[in-house]
Amino acid sequence: MTLFDEVKKSYYETLGIPKNAQAPEIKRAYFGLVRKYPPDRFPEEFKEIRAAYEVLSDQEKRAKYDAVGELPASVAPFFYEAQRLDRFGRYGKAEELYRTILKLHPELDNVREQYAWTLLADDKTGKAIEVWEELCRRNPGNSHYARELTRTYIDRGWHKKAFTEIRRAIAMDRRSIDNWSVLITCNMLSFLTHPDWEESYTLCLEALEAVKDVKIEEWKKIHLYTYAFITSGIKKKGEGREHLKELLRLTRESGREGREEGKEALEEIVKFLPTQGLAVFYDDLKELAALFSDTDDNLALIKLDDARLIAESNALVQKGFHEIFRDLFRMIIDDVGGEEEELEILAIECILLNKRDQFAPQIRRLKAEFPELYEFYDSFFDEVLRTRNPEKLLFQRSKKLSGLKRKYGIFDKESGLEPESQPIRRDQPKVGRNDPCPCGSGKKYKRCCGA
Image (cartoon, rainbow, N blue to C red; front, top):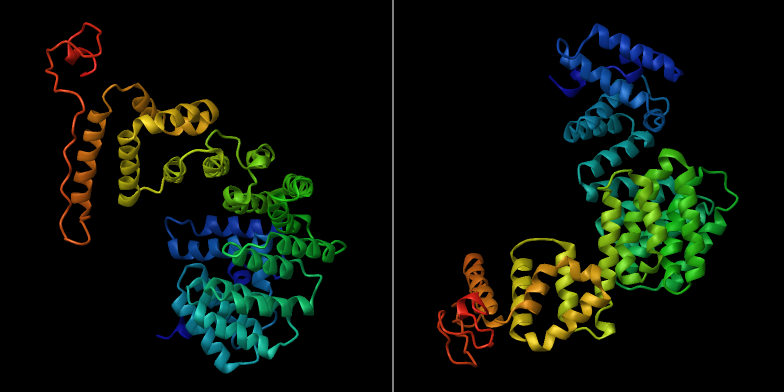
């Protein structure tokens, strides 16, 4: 049996409704069929009915489904089957159907576009690029195809090609907010390694001016205001605050779409918060994060707090702290886990204990000036400040560090053997556990400093 023998009806035919059916009619048809084909008795039929309802009851999904236009009657059933296979993640069979349709009707660019989307869903970006490039050759004035080719170039990491293509799309349609959004995204991705905030901010202002009078849903502008805020925030605080206010307003007033776009905006801002110096806007960003959840475990707010603390730890070196504190907090706040981080944190603890007299004043200053950072690792810092026997703590951690190195198979690179641990040499004579404590407390050593 071939795939052509397995084709199913369109979603409209599955629900038994006309193509111009409205929401109430779609809903009635769905529940009527569910009563007729309950999932416990007709699981396969129910899957078909549910898949049709999920698409046709969602305005955006339905528009995309209808966007293919009128197909020749000979291939329409195969196209709808390919879309159904897409929804169930059976990309290989869907791709086979799309290729077969295009062999019969190579002029159907709407089918070719759907084929490109399926290839992307199947992580076949190389083949998807070939399809988008073919669409651009066949439709040289279509900025939509040029924009989607740009996005696929970005996914592939081909930023130079992406810049060229999206600028071509903007030349075709300067009033498309989607074109500008992709250009700015591409620009910002390159600036993660080669930042030029002034140039990027100028581009954001150009984009906002180009779409100022375009009649579009307001939530679509959130993306532009996000990057306008990021690029202006570090050097133009006043302008940055105005862009952030507009971002907040659009997120609040644009319904579900605004909330979704605002959530993505905050995630993007969090990426740049530590390096871009945006922590001064923390209170406003906290207000943005609060829009996404009424619970205490708001993930957006947690990520925002972590980013602010990383920004604060990055500034420690400029404020006279040793860089070892910055490195320690980065690992603790990121909480990546894994053997490398575990070993590095333990090694830093050993350094701080080995040079306790040097680092203790900075730990006390950290507690006074940066209490939130101190609290992240207060149990260790308190131990360092309180102990009268740092040698004992150092010995314990050195022993644990050696054990972890053996566990993870980390050896000396030159000899291939684990380096021998050096014994701890006491500056004072050895004191027995039942001897008087040398600190002069009058207690036995084991109940005082030797505890």
